[in-house]
Length: 71
Image 1 (spheres, rainbow, N blue to C red):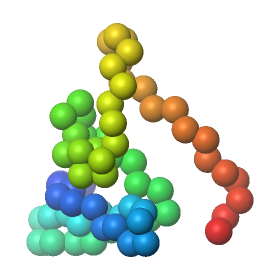
Image 2 (tube, rainbow, N blue to C red):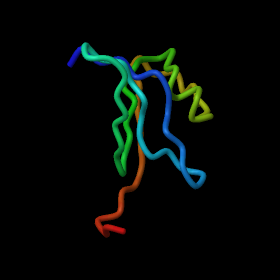
Image 3 (tube, one colour):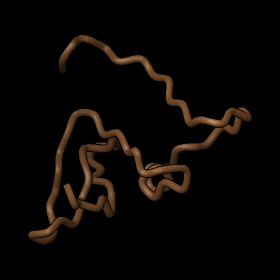
C-alpha cells in the first residue's frame, strides 16, 4: 500500500521485478510475474516496450497463457 512503481528490474532480457518508492523510501520487489495495473497511460508498459493494440473496446483486456510448470 502507498507504494509507487518507478521502474523495472531487468535481468537476462526479462523483467525480474520493479523498483518503487513507499512510505519508508525506495524498495525493490522481485517476482516471477510482474503485472502493471497502472492505467491506460502506463509508464511501466512503456518501459517494458510493450505495444498497445487498439481494438475499440470500452475496457482494457490482457490475454496470456501461463504455464503450470515452475522453472
